[in-house]
Length: 304
Image 1 (cartoon, helix red, strand yellow):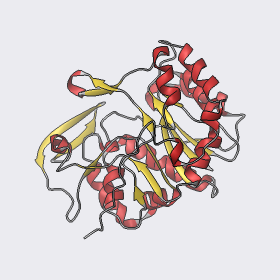
Image 2 (cartoon, rainbow, N blue to C red; image 1 turned 90 degrees about the vertical axis):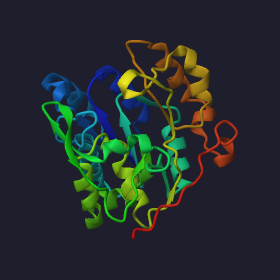
Image 3 (cartoon, rainbow, N blue to C red; image 1 turned 30 degrees about the vertical axis):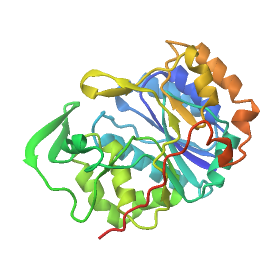
């Protein structure tokens, strides 16, 4: 079984379509609706979810891009899922603009075949992405709907190595328990609370600097087409009908991002694909390697 966390702030009809595609009895679902989305949006989502079992809406707070509020929402989602059910073994986070490329039966079997693997992108920030070290080199403050970089420099956590990746992941229940409840995670939470874009680094850094977290696959199991976008540098391109073949042949479990208002036909095509053997019958790693070789396994560091 799977514990899903979904971060939602717009596109209610698109979310409903995505949720129907990922819903399966036995799974658990925690939903966070951005408080900035307004009460009518939240009420609409609550009404839609009411008939489904194994679903909880966690307390709505404002989720600011670049701020720790996104990490906080995810940790609260993990905590809620852990309390809701003891049956799920893996955690997957999604946004309202994601969509599955495989059925729930396929995803469950894939995770069952890889019980100790952590699917998260994790790169040594100092050696591979030194251009992003300004995210942790100074104190940041989240206020007035913005992120502010202060003039207060700081050293990184003693005895730890900073890592970076994306915010998307499919990780084990045991890692969620560790991230939410273990006292050794507290110093990472305190440090990243004052950093920039911590949702792309906190979980990676915690995992890679903690022992006994399993194999880290440096893969988030997402098909994303990153394109340049000004100061942000990269953003995910919106998939459209012309991308259907690429998406249906992808070995990944999910893709992002989509926009129902921009292209509705791509949803029809993927939903039809989800009923085919390619999306329903998991037959092991050999089924996915020819299309997309998986990233190398990387070992978590032993903490000093």
